[in-house]
Image (cartoon, rainbow, N blue to C red; front, side, top):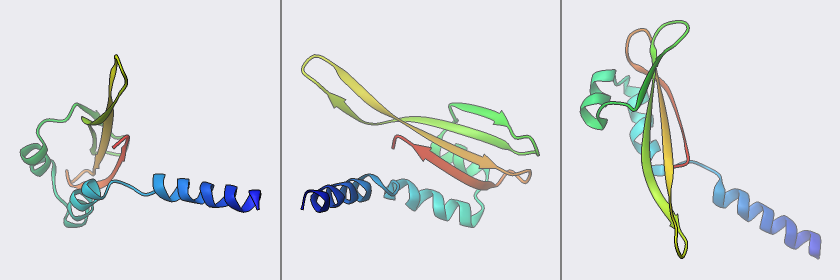
Length: 101
């Protein structure tokens, strides 16, 4: 019985914490599919927080955003969301990832 309860709780935790951010996925999946370019992201998202060249050409852009916060009695700790966009040589989005969002 204890094992079953533990298994159910572990599964619930995995389901609750798993998956991604549906709002980001709703923006980024179509952008990747449609091959949006750097200009589109600059126009709609603004300048990235950082840029880095990729080894085989292209560029990696990183955006940092505040995504909610946790507060205690005397402190405030914002959650920082990191979004990484990878562009190919043709300057179109080839892949993306995010964490903390």
